[in-house]
Image (cartoon, rainbow, N blue to C red; front, side):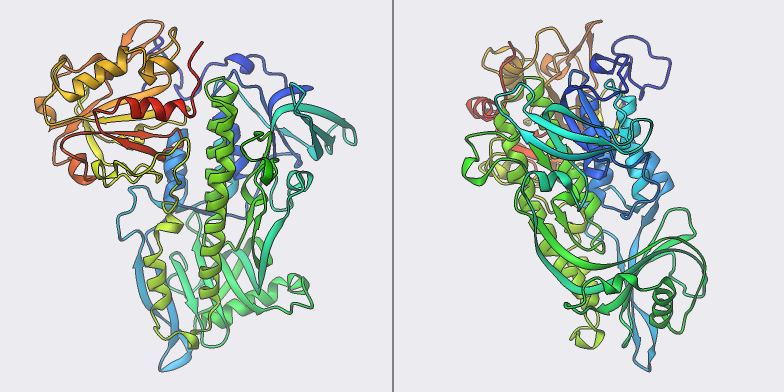
Length: 631
């Protein structure tokens, strides 16, 4: 990380000085605010953490519980989520306390003795090299803790207001604060009191039984699979050799178990197949006693046994695959004419089984997708139409999740004697791994994502998908570093200039000519959308990547567009110049044209567009769709 740019910092640089609404922030919920967040689930905490980094935005969050979540239902963390944690500054810490998945083992009936199970396959995690980030398991409550700690460390100093229940809302677009939310205190000295607060925007991250969703008139649509599962977090003594390895176990006639190891070295989660349920007797299976679930687990694991010494958490559920009919308050017929004021995300929008491990992961991306857009609109940097893209982008992703989970959970429950290929489940897991890793998302063309017209210039960085990092050499300290790991959750756009064949020069090369235009031309997006009194990279984090070995690169001949100025000391930042070296060549690894290319990346790390270095009007037209010139 970089710091000292404002002057010497002697304390923890991750803890930022309070600014704006973060200075002496009142603990009591005000009558009016910019954003009211309902809930503190995975989607909601991503919004809280992101908006707390913009202290000019007055944000408050309410939670019905009287304190932090003690135990979360979710535990699987996709690589894409770990990448997101890195942008918020806590990836390394959460990895240290988590379980890192390295393979999935499958167990099937022994052909010689079908009542016994034997290991039949080992599937390496991410054998395709989709990401440098790991696939980990850790309790959801810890994920929430880290996001909320980040929010408290950020300049906005946002801390949720616990013990407050959301009841309903009304929206009056003629009001300066259009959303009137009725709330009720359910804990503390004011318990039982109701009041109305107003917000410019309301964000509902209040779970599968979302009251915000109900208030907006939306409902979940889909179907239940009529298949029940018991889920248990267990501390056991066992002779089963893979208890601390992710496993999918299919017995001859007792159903299946999925084992998900947990953090700490002792705990594992078991999803135990309880069989089909009666559609005319819905809910009865939820009364299954824990002893019966454990007995079923032992029957499936035969000849191995579980001696249960402790149960950290358990539940019984029926798989349901449902997605909401709307992600915001705008009716279908009014899309594009009016812009949303209230949103829902996470489990309020999509419910599914836990076995694909995507609920928390997709929810986090819901929250990040929305929050940077809210910040841009509230700070006057983007038109309200930018908020239309939240619903259009995330609803498709939610449906993709439901479709994938329906197929995956059906295969997990499929009786072993119905498989033509005994290794079919392991092969499906390997072939579709990009989805649970979190990298299948690809946003379509819209105002913040271009067409694929120039994709050939950077074939390994698909437009609409998460930026796929690769190592480069940072010239300032000749250190090799992943380019994408420098992307912080700060609301800025990334402009990666992959230079043409010529070495650094101040004039006479395509890269130098672009740099001069980008730095000072009145039509340049950098000039149009960057405040005059701040850092020159306040809106666009612009980096140059040269093809040459770092030993051939000197900072001196590098154009000033790639050496931003930091206020108030007017320090020149020379840490944005990169090159090849020590066997690292991002041009080769990501199939980037040696003629050069510009890759624009959104604040949430998705590739917005690929452009030729000669692009001028195209860049102007692209940013004009979703940015407002500084006044």
